[in-house]
Length: 460
Image (tube, rainbow, N blue to C red; front, side, top):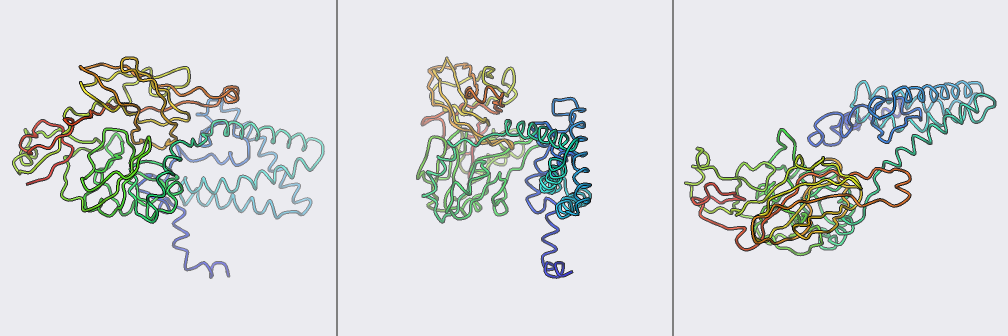
């Protein structure tokens, strides 16, 4: 009663942690959060031989009977632990384990699967401690049961650790190089990085339009996900009045990307990132219904297009438009591993172009194009939660339209990783060629922009 009285003023906030409202429901879109499905409570017993913690007994690759047999063994050890504890009148640990399981059960019934999974993770070490103390501390069959639990748990832990992705350092170090520039300043981050707040430590408010752990409430994007998903990592994702809230904009250097407003100046850059400082108001700046693309074609055959073209003003067009190879064009698929590269061909227009790649990968990626003389490596990128911005690969120049084949393959892991058969796959999405040079981006009267690929426009 005393605890209830002391916490009464916080009951509303405490109750919110039974739902994803405590996080960001707009980001996740369901009560599963980033889980594929609810966690099986048998995992808390200590034996679940899968490299994915949220795998089910039927989706993990092993026969389901292996999981249930391991769970039965672990459950027997837990029951034995409770019986031994009651016999010895040492009930504090079992009481804590059962209380934690009761909290999980309550959240599983009345809360969300995501929050219930957190409760299950809290209960698991208490359950296993009860099991081990009640078996390894005894004699005879109980000791054998405890040893079997230790071996099964060790195998389960090994599989998880073997499959875990170790954070690479390249992108993090590049971001840290920019941190001194934004000390105390508000930053719009047009990327995806769970630890951007740490890498830009000392900055003011860090806001992203695609985020996990940093503020999104004050920067509502003008473009939402389409039916097929997709994100927009582009300065045009915000309305001008929202853009003017920020002192700095931090983006990747991959293409294609909208032109930044003229009052945003480059103040620093690394191989993969560029930092812009705002020196004035963005001004009037409108876009077509471009969704997650960098621009869209102005179709003057439609009533809306005719109205825009007759309204006067200027348009910034991309000529020629960027070349975009989609994820579905990779062969044999979009998940290369070392020794099994993925390939895709794109048609480049004459002139200079920036080749960029949208991807995630546990290890650096080796990118090769014999036609263009590309043989380079791009940094590992562990943004596994969905679409990522594009990262630059190389600048190339061709004298005539050229169909270029690209091969992408993760670097070979070290000997230990190979012996352990650690995962080494990548996930490829778009492969793009963005035309460069003086003629690639032009401003024209909007009446001349019909049929052109428009980045942004300003009505007269």
